[in-house]
Length: 123
Ligand SMILES: [Mg+2]
Image (tube, rainbow, N blue to C red):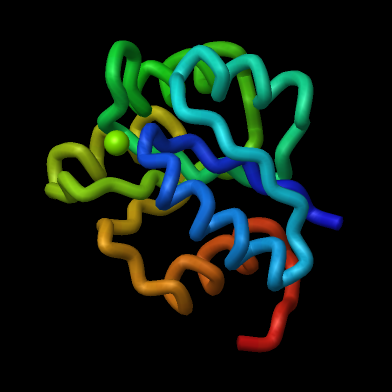
């Protein structure tokens, strides 16, 4: 089963996303800090990462930078309430595959995840 690493300091959002993707057959793991995200990217080996940009301490850009310089090929979807063109461009330059604004549309998000993982689920 495909694995999703959910990275967001909002525990409620992580719970909602975990439930949603488990429903669609994904194995989920949620973390709330950039450091835990990097650790889990190695130990959990996700097929895809959902990444928040704004977290206390290190943020999503730090995660992107670290994974990018480590040569990671894990697809990353940035999920942020602060969606703007500059951030989207910066995230893309650092290897993000997609950029979705919060509050997210569930169908849009699942479609993007399925596309990037090659998984087919019925919406
Ligand atoms: Mg946040």
